[in-house]
Image 1 (cartoon, rainbow, N blue to C red):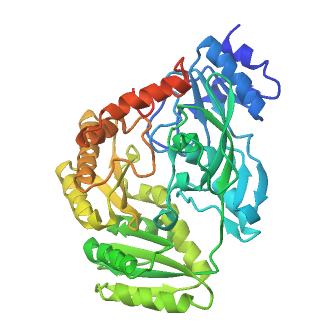
Image 2 (tube, one colour; image 1 turned 90 degrees about the horizontal axis):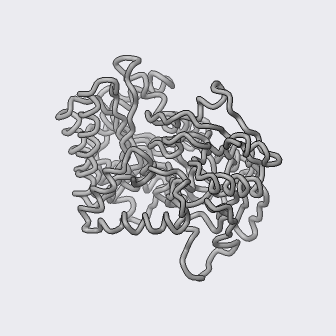
Length: 463
């Protein structure tokens, strides 16, 4: 009996084997494409996932887990075919308890849907990747996603209290719990964050939630250079003002959203600094005036403030949609968009951006730069026709080069997109540079302890 026939015996699950049904599962939102899976199975419960894993482990069939498919590094791409487990049906919000600051959700819940429900009771779940419309609870835990609010609230790992996980052998474990603090040995909850589906399959998550800010306002300042914008953010933090959101966009980013969204900006502007501040209703004007006054001392071309929700939401959605808007900057439809994602201490951002700009020229690549200036996270959208070998070599060289720049400034090769298929060599570079190459060997030993037959998402993070 083949694997598809065995999986059809799992009560309650949906099994897809038709070519037209399973082709979409070969890719994520990156430029990587995997092999056609033997089957795609869509379970509806933890028990079904456990039975699926027992079968696949017994038959030693490769398994790849898929959330919303919004990964940008190839994490859910099935490079060995095998079985893809889609968590799309496990999309329930099980329990919400604001008095204890948590929500319990299944892995297929989309972040925007989760926050719509939490918003009805005045709470929210802070991790906020640009793909939140499609990104799921399970997928964002697996990649330790960040987002626009990370400068204040950190990345996903700061907001996970506990998990239910199905191991590759079919056992079900629970990690963490419903309390805001605990100390009980190795933190397996934290280990799952960023593991990219290589250690187990998350089937339930207990997530910390937070009250929505009473009021928010926005400062938009345009600059000719990025350095003053970076210094402005540093000064705000020094003065005790931590932005709710702090973003930057370069000239090509601004051109992209002008084309896509009709948003205008000063002709001489090369960078936009977008800052949201949050406070009480009574104090917001005072905090905004103080923050805007600090930014003005760094001589922006222009500066504006607003508390208009509709106006703020329009720009917020434009920023979150920048990946798709930037497609307007392609020179031909054959070009892919390869997204670089590095991070440095915020103080090192201006020099890092200048270095990235120089490297883009050296490798003859068109690159759009934007990101989370509050935490030093740079997204470099590289436009490239990857069917050309010379272009592919330039893209790889550029990625390696900007990783080196980030490391030279005390940063990391991956801020919030994970390692996946794309950044395995970059991860090795970082560990070698830090004199910590044994970390990969340790990761392999952890992987072996969780997954003795090596069936779960093989080839991701490391070979």
